[in-house]
Length: 97
Image (cartoon, rainbow, N blue to C red):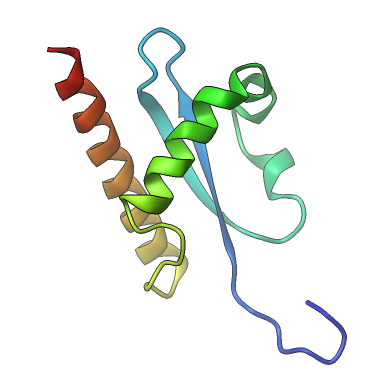
């Protein structure tokens, strides 16, 4: 929140990636409160494979519509994020065959 500005509700999406196939093994949505990255599981491990994880987030933002979510409330944003993660896994899985 900037000085003189209204506060905005913000969320952070976290992804746990399978190293072997590049699939999303787990996802988590937290409120952006300044400590969310530290609290989220799998963040320290993800630094080593940053490029592959960033490609997941790029797909989720462009194709999955996660750049600017149209949902309000943590439960609805979590559901949207989970559905986009499942769609990503299906697309990657389809490309194997």
